[in-house]
Length: 540
Image (cartoon, rainbow, N blue to C red; front, side, top):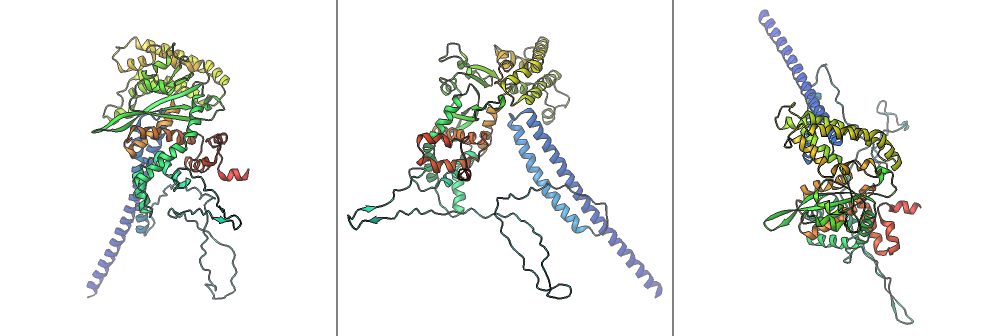
C-alpha cells in the first residue's frame, strides 16, 4: 500500500510540475505575441514616418503616394489595436517572472485649458478605515481627468418684437425686424457656416449632412439646405470680390488646375478647377496670401485668358500650353512673364530613379537610371539652398542665388546638354531633359536667378488644390456647371482663410452675422487678414 501511495504522490507532483511548466509556457507565449505585435506596430509606424518624410522631401504631386499613406495609417491603427489586445492578454497570463518588455506609448497632450471642467467629487469616508475613528482631516486630493463629449445641441432662437400703441394718437410702434444673413432667414449664421464648411471644407455633400441632422432630431431636406447654400453665396459676394481684386493686384501669381468630374448625360465628363494664388511671404512681401478659384467645363486656352484678362506680371505655372496666349508679345495690356516650376521638372527625373516604385512593380531595385538619379541629386542641391533663403527679402535672395545657386544651375545645364547628346531622343531621360530645354523654357526655368520674387517651384498653387483631390473621393462629381462655379467661389473663401491661419468656419459664421449690417466701407474689415474674433474685438 505504501508503494502505491508513494507512486500516486509522485504522479501528482509530476502533474503539478507539468501544469506549472504549461502555465509558464502559456505566459511566455502571450508575452512573445505581445512583443511581436508591438514590434510590427513599431515597424509600420517607422515605415509611415519614412513615407511622410519622403513625400515632404519629394513633393505631394503623386496622389498614389497619398493613398498609400492613408492605407498605411489604417494598417497602423489595426496593428496598434492588436498590440494592445496582446499586451492585455499577456498581463492576464503572466503568473511568473519572465523577460519583460516595455511598449512605447504615444504621449498624450494635456487637455486644453479652455474646455469646461465638471468636478465630480467621490464621497469621502466619515471614519478612518483602519481604526474607525471619526477624527479625520483632509490633507489633499488626487484628480483624474477624463475627456468626454456632449452631443451637439440644437436650439431655436425666438426674436420677439413687442408692439406698443399710443393711447393719445393710437399709433402702433414696433422695433424693426433684424437683418438675417440670408433672405429667408430661418437659419442662424453658425448653422449656415457649419453647412458651408462641411460641404466645401470637409467635403461632406448636403445629402449626407441632411441624413446626419435627421438622426439628431432636426429634419432639414436636401433642397432646403441647397437653398441656403445659394443664398449664402449671394450674401458673401462682396467678400469674394475683394479677395479677387487682392489676388489680381499681385505682381506675381502661382497658377495651376486639377480635374473635377462633372455630371453629364450617361456619366461624367472631365471638367477643371483653376487656382491663382498670391503668396508674397517667400520674398518677405507684406501682402497677405490669398487664393482665387475658377471652374470650367474643359481645359481650353480661353479660360486662363479670361481669368487673367487685364492682368500683367509673373505667372508661376507648369508648362501647360494653355497659358501660351498670355505670353504673347502683342497681348493687351502686355505679355505675362513665364516662370516654370522646378518640381515638375525634377519629378520627371525622379520617376526614373524611384527605387521604391520599381520594387512595387516587381522590377529589380537596381533597375533605375543612373543619369536620372544624378539629375535628382543636382536639382536637390539647388532646392537645399532655396529652403535656406525662403522668407528673406528680395535683395538677400538675389545675392544668395548669384553666389550659390547660379553656379549649380549653369553646371546642371552643361551636364544635361552633354548627357542629352549621348542619348536617343526616345530615351526617357532624354525626354525629361528635353522638357526643360524645349523652345524657350530654359529662360523661364532660370527666371528666378534674376528676380527675387520668383520661387523655385509652383508648390503654393499645388497646396491650394490639395483639398480638391480629397474632395473628389467624397462628393464624386460636380452636379452642374453652376455647382462648379459655386464650389470655386467657396474654395476661394475657405482656402484664403486657411492661408491666413484663420478657422474658416468661425470666420464664415462671424462674417455672415455682421455682413447684413455692414456698410460698404466696413466690409474690408471682414477679410480674413483683417478679421478679429468677437472676443478680441471686445477686449480691444
